[in-house]
Length: 344
Length: 273
Image (cartoon, rainbow over all chains, first blue to last red; front, side, top):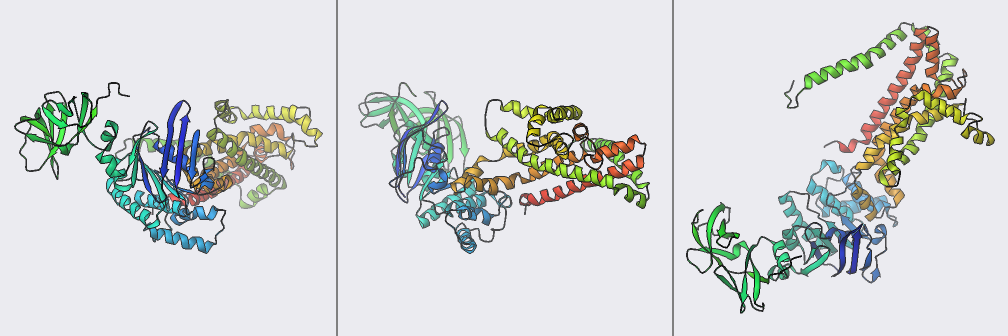
């Protein structure tokens, strides 16, 4: 089902959580709402679900205006961060709950068969008789997903679904959710503050800040062409240098990089840790190594630039760099933004 | 004994056991010994005398009535206090404890004044043909009053801790309000409700001060068991008093045992497998 948000607004008491968000989600698409806490991502998801009513604007499911349809009639599957499984029901009873309370009457045998089918889908065959307190967090979240899918929702909504899980469990579940989405083709929106999760999983990433959409696009589009410094920083570690643009080139402490199309004036230059390198001679930013951290695949070098900035970058494991060494940080690749004189 | 990192086990356990022995077990044991000093035949004739049996009936029936009433009203009160925010909520919340704080005799006297034929409530009710004072109904009302806090105070914290996401999940799955209450909320409250109910019932069985003023205390009709015990004591018939008291004690004990068992059943899902 295609979902469309049209200038949706939500205000809590005096605090405006969502400022006029418009968004279209194609049928079968897997979309991530990504943003820091307080960006309104969860509120948007809850409004799509009907767990929160929009104060302004409209939400359409297909051609139908769903803005005022209560959650129980909206036909959404919602997965909560902390699972929200019914603790007094077994796994099978949890999954069957939606079918047993539905207005569409189903026979006992029908429900049992569907529960078995869903248990198989989420790879929990044989655990139907356990209570939620007796299975692991990752298993609980899979039960929660099966429960949400049991009612054949028009859209699947996941609120930080892997937020409460260990890193490796999170990784497995991510891949598994992707597979399930491919298998079922159900329109899915999930909320996360973990950029890696959003980029790994989603067809399209919607980045939010303070209740507004800052940028949306495929993972490739937002990674390669972040619209502003906020998006760039939010998507991953970045070093920041202040400098100046002159005649289409940005300069910072001896390093020079192309900045086509930018007007002359103060600028900020952002470079990922892998986009910097170290050399004994310039041209580059003169700096002194303060510390080297050894990691399995690379060495992380921390330096203090003469311009006062602390920079971090990664070099190959074979490189011989030690604390106290002086040299130059060279820029391989960077993004240049005109410096906002009055940052928000 | 296994070594424990938490300090003070021996001292605190010793003190507690000593205290429980002194305050709870010793008097109960004395009661049992006193009652047992009667032969089985005498014991049976005292506890099964028509007057005693009539007192059990009126006490147990009134206590059951009061407990059932409190079950609904107490749950409603706890529900309103936890789920909604309204002016005066904290005041109502504080008032729930009043029956604990007020001397029960004071409660009994006020209730009698209110429900007597010329009292505020009694005069209205007498027009409807209902007499409360000096009837089993009066006993029930006094019991309701003194045992109300038990249900409210046991259910309230559980309701407060109930994750709102559970209800949201049930709603998103299409459950109606009533279905959600019946299938999700009530089962989760049931252990607390059971605990509150059994405490409320046990308290009603033993209530004395609030009842004797409003009951009228006519033998065979509105004489509660606790009063019969008191009368036997006044007659210096300690053995008979102990015998009748032992019946109350056993009833309370059985009630608590049954509710504990029911509670354990209701909480089966918390057992780690």
